[in-house]
Image: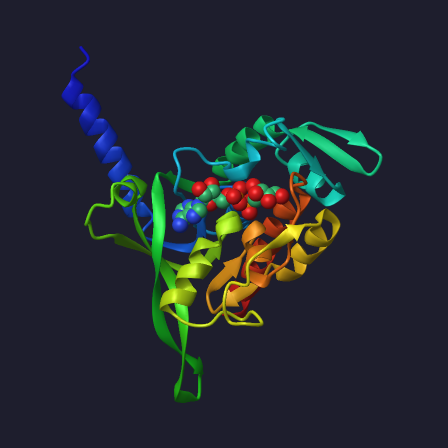
Length: 269
Ligand code: 48F
């Protein structure tokens, strides 16, 4: 017999257990687009406990729509190699590859989940946790502020503009993979302090120049505030580089790079 209340109980208990298991993690990834999914996958593969929060109902960000809703994305060699690991089929044209954007999102997400990434959808990061930590072992007075987690709420609460207090998740690192918006960096500037950009602010992305944008993104992928890294389009938006349109290699390679930077930092600890 199928009892409605049993269905309810199973759903609520299971979801709450999952939530409680992820209150303290190694890395929080903000945003489930191509950069966030790649960052999260590599970190989980390296054995880190990773939780990814996606504001929308579906993960995949701007990848589903390909270029102007033609469901294809273009990649260079480095991006294609990353997609190969997710078994996405790519066709070669000279020194570029093309892939089906729907196949990309579904297979990248499946691979990330298989590696152990915990994805929560319909949750928005609306603030960060910040603490003072001792910068120098020998000097108790030398304190620097550091991001050490996120403040979250249901997206539906935000959309309805309801006055409902949020909850928090602690992490060693946070990755802003929120795309063009760079929403975590914006809120850090507003509430916490200056980023390590030329102006201390989110500089904002420039007009389209695919080649330059794809090369700049690798330099822009870094720690932008203690404990906070940027990955994907957010990196170019924060440091004032160009956008690239429907070529996605940079998103994937940036995602991979940020995972390597975080793993190096973890070793230093
Ligand atoms: O926008 P998005 O796909 O960013 P990305 O991974 O890739 C960029 C490309 O899609 C494309 C491009 C390629 O040339 O330029 O635009 O850098 O994915 C960002 C995700 O973050 C979510 C948002 O819904 C999207 O799915 N997001 C944004 N703000 C928040 C968030 C937030 N505050 N909390 C949780 N998720």
